[in-house]
Length: 136
Image (cartoon, rainbow, N blue to C red; front, top):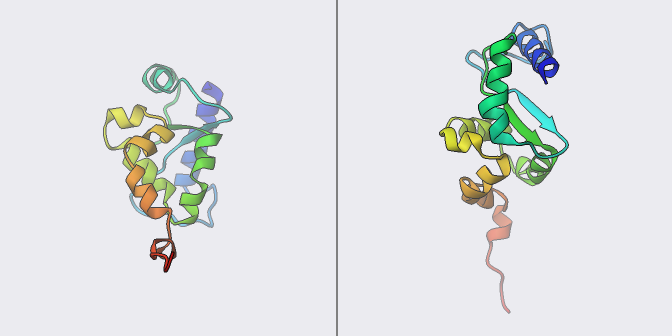
């Protein structure tokens, strides 16, 4: 994990300096949310509370950015319809990670279920889906 954190930090710095993906514009105050993606679930609280702080203290810290987010593939797959409906992944992670320690420690699935369920439910339907049916 140390090697991957160092690599992630290097890429963030290169992006911030305009050396990585220079064709993408840089906004003043733009938030960068580093994500570690795994094929399966993580022992989330242990990693966020103990492992990451210890690694970042011992090794070169990651460039100025938002807290590291841990995700697994099933969490991303579950959001596919919401992304198509206009959900901003960056805004979602910003709300989750900056709305208190309890939400930061929740998996993305739990955060969505317990905190943002109403938001996602409303966004998952188009206006046509809400038109009352006739007859019957």
